[in-house]
Amino acid sequence: MAYTVLARRYRSQNFDELVGQDAVARTLLNAIDQNKVAHAYLFVGTRGVGKTSTARIFAKALAGGSPEVDKAILTGQDTDVIEIDAASNRGVEDARELIAKASYRPLRGKFKVYIIDEVHMLTKDAFNTLLKLLEEPPEHVKFILCTTEADKVIPTIRSRCQRFDFRPIPTAKIADHLGAVLKEEKIKAEPELLHAVARLGNGSMRDALSLLDRVIAASPPGATLSVEMLEKLLGLPERDVVTALVDALADADAKTALASADRLIAQGVSLEQLVETLVLHLRDLMILSACGADSTLVDLSGPARDAAVRQAARFDAPGIVHMIALCESVQRALSHSATARALTDALIVRLAMTEKLADVAALLSGVPAPAPGARPIGAQLSGAPPAKKR
Image (cartoon, rainbow, N blue to C red):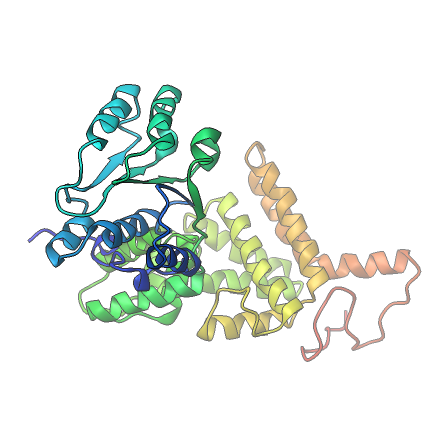
């Protein structure tokens, strides 16, 4: 039997199973319960957030009734729920054919539902042809238009639809769903692996499930899925080396920091990826420093969060903000520089010297130097070891 990918096998079957789109689900259910279903809807959101799944579930609620019909709708095979890919059916003739077929009444249900995916791909003439049908639709026809780029849908179409915006799915909810999927698949995984995959999904459940599929395929049978497997699969910077690099920055140890950066580069990490990884890592430390160890703004859990909290205590928020600004400045210069490696190494050294530079700035401004053993400007948080004497 052919393998079915996780994103298809674990697609939501009803409104209760939709992840991260509670407001949309509740509103659509209320419309059905109160018999206030509009003739046209516009579902807007990035890829993989549940637009097409919601459209099918909504169509099932409108046109379904029996298990056989419900299954056909959810798999895109029902005669009364017609799915059209506007990317490959974008011309005016396709729109005219849709209009001609819309006049026929549904074969089994109360409504004939048209789900038009990537509707922004229609030509201007096709939009204008479709507009005629949306202005005076047959009572038995409902339209659900899905798009990732609402601004490319002409205003006259948008004005005739009820619009629903699908938000990126929170990382925590994606991680919880991935955990449920693996439990159903009887596959073990480190909690951090779930959070790492969820973060890389960037708000898209489909992307996260697709990535999880790849990790499963790359792992030995019966193995516990780990962050290390994910790093090797995608060529990501090793988390332990990145942590060692930032620890060296906290110690003002430029030599060790440069060695850690060189190790990452030797593993195939590009200079741009190295700086981006530093920015994301420093961002987490900044949030933990500014908002506390329990902040929900940081998508880390378990040992990874504990380690980040300990590391954040070695910096203060203003200092990290300065470090991120330095990284961002170099990041913009890397792509068109003939000396990108030198710029990156200089960045690492400068980050390691941030505390010394802050002390010099304080002296030049007339601020007294900190007493021996006191926390220097831009350095450690209370509770961390005192600064070393130089």
